[in-house]
Image 1 (tube, rainbow, N blue to C red):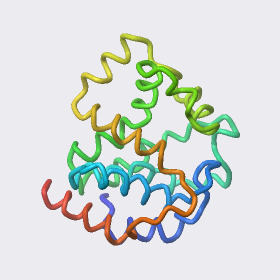
Image 2: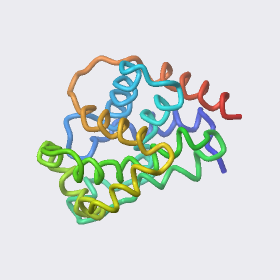
Image 3: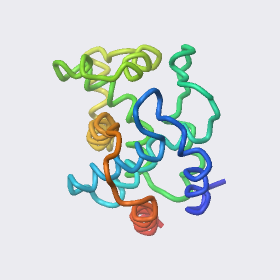
Length: 184
C-alpha cells in the first residue's frame, strides 16, 4: 500500500525529531538539508524528492539508538520502497534504493572519500558490504539512475550541519508532489 503525502508528513512529525545516526542533526533536518543541497545544485523535482525521502526507511523503524553501534545494518534504503512505489517512478526510487551502494562506489573510485566519512558512515560501510571491488563499481555505475544515486550520496554526506537554515518540509513535499504528478 502506497503512502499518501499526508502519511509522509506524519512520519516526519512523529519520528523526524530523533537524532540522525550519531550526527548533530535530526532525521528531519538531515532530509531537509539533503533536499536543499539538491535544489541548490539545480536538481529536478524527481531528484529533490529522492533527496528528501532517501532515509525515510529510518523513520519506519524504532531503533532507539544508532543501529550501527549494535552491529546492525537496518537496510533502510529498501524499507520505504514498497510504500513509495505507488507514488513515484524509477527516477525517484532508484536513487533511494542505491544511495548506500553509491557510498560503496565512491569509496572504490574516489581517493580520500572513505576517510572523509563520518564515524557512523564508516561503521555502516562495513555492515553494508564494504568498499566495492573494481568490477562491482563498474556494474553499479552502469545501472540506470546510478549517477543520480551518486549525486544524492554526495549531498547526503554534506547534510549534517547543525543549524543550517532550509525551506520547510511543506516546500519539499510540494516538489515531491510535482515529481509524483509527472510520473502518474
